[in-house]
Amino acid sequence: MTNTPASCVGKVVLKLGDDISTDVIYPGRFMATVLPAETPQYAFCDLVEFNTRLKKKEIPPRSILVAGKNFGCGSSREQAASALKGHELLIIAKGFARIFLQNAINLGLRIVVCPDLEASEGDEVEISGQRVINRTSLKTFPMVPLPLTRQAIIDAGGLIPYTRKRLLEKHA
Image 1: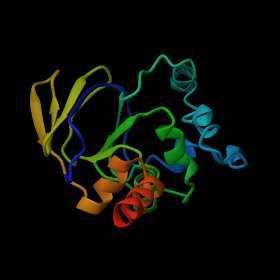
Image 2 (image 1 turned 45 degrees about the vertical axis):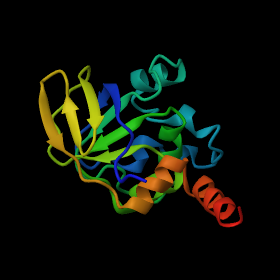
Image 3 (image 1 turned 135 degrees about the vertical axis):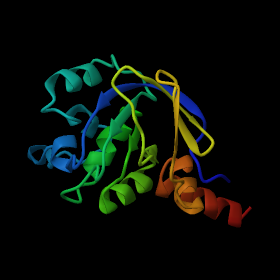
Image 4 (image 1 turned 120 degrees about the horizontal axis):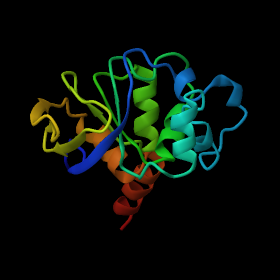
């Protein structure tokens, strides 16, 4: 078991600033839609061009969204994390709002905390060990690893698969 996400390389498809609320990620007017299979269509729907690219599947899985501090602030809506997971995005932020962070972990959304990250849309970024490497600028930034159990939950695909796996291991 590791406390860092698996190594990967991806392209930054969207760069956002600080204090991106759950209402930006998943607007409240869609709160009646709660099924994980349906929430992705509303991810960033007020960022029309980006939402259209997501819905048309022009953004490949494992693409990277970069954000500043306090990503996912605002309401406790789980749909914000669900909508992003449905597109298999990796979120690298300088910091996450507490409730969004826990929702992301519970749903198995791939997240990385990297307080000093410098990256722009179009940059190629690599997660390797405990660092984030911007292959475009050739700069390296330390990441803040999640506690072992939290990373294990993400790696398992969320809290339900993690719990199921643990129960099966216990009774094997």
